[in-house]
Image 1: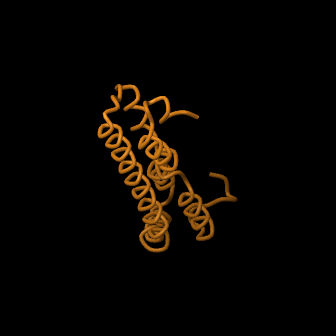
Image 2 (image 1 turned 60 degrees about the horizontal axis):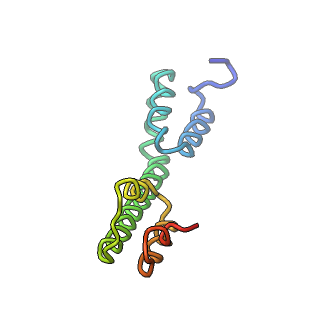
Image 3 (image 1 turned 90 degrees about the vertical axis):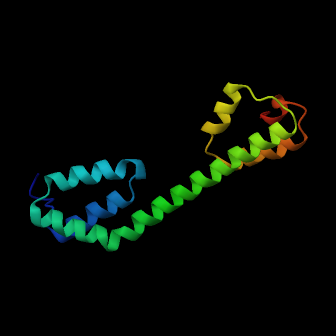
Length: 127
């Protein structure tokens, strides 16, 4: 590591932790592990302590928000498929897979609202 950026420096540690907190949650764990592997023992301990205190809130908030979004999408999937089933509209496997893969809750809600009155799947998924 070049002398300009040393993980033993508290300002560098704070910068690295800030960047990790802004990283895609799916990548945070592997990036954090990589950083901690190259840190000295003292730097690793200091960074882990910061993660337990200051940065814990950011990580927990991120994970909670992600969990809420996944829960909302799951509820929207069930709602849409339930409306289609109640209306007697057959849902082929490919369409079911498309619905289940969608994470855009606004789009899922739009499809569900159309499903209430649609004559068929073409009307539900019309652009």
